[in-house]
Image 1 (tube, rainbow, N blue to C red):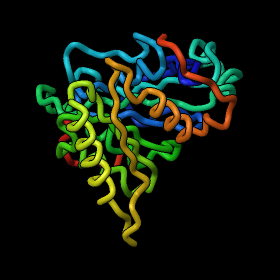
Image 2: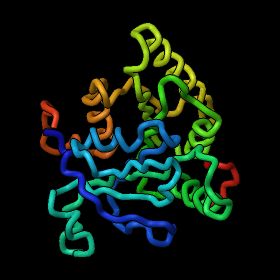
Image 3: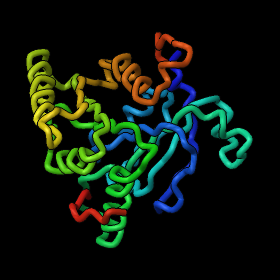
Image 4: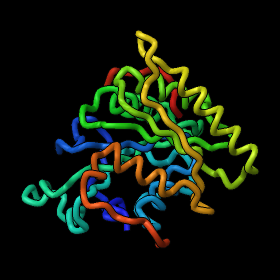
Length: 240
């Protein structure tokens, strides 16, 4: 089993002041509504209902945290004597790109999302979820541009790869890698951006994604597991 299978709900926040104070690595999942973010988190953690996938895209407007580091920890998230057992946090960010959200909620959502990815010191990396058939929308690019100044890694999961034939899937991955390579710092050095194909339906890319997340959180320094078996900078861009 994978250490990610230990994931348990930790907390949910709707204001930056309520972010967890734990000093452990965080890896955040971001993406457009309907890109398959919740499904990807659930299958990587081998749990059907860990991450809530709303039937109404754009409804989730909170940041949800899941702890890694002992199956019991999530049940004692307010017990400070247990929190030192947490090794990392997986973070589910609100899905963006859904238009039918009230203006005030949309503005709050954008500020919360933008400030978290730009200023959160514990944030080690971003997992950007994109539909392999429609990657790099304007909002996806905006997310990359928000995050780029941190210099931290981005790993893109090109989801729903089962919808593409082999040739189209290969081309989609090559295109993504070329686009990501175009993001460079002021000295022209490419940012640490990577991509892979992923499908929850036929389980494509699960092992690769698992290994990458463990690397980004430092969890691969723990006991190795096999994963066999099923199981506020006030950004102004409109992310809804």
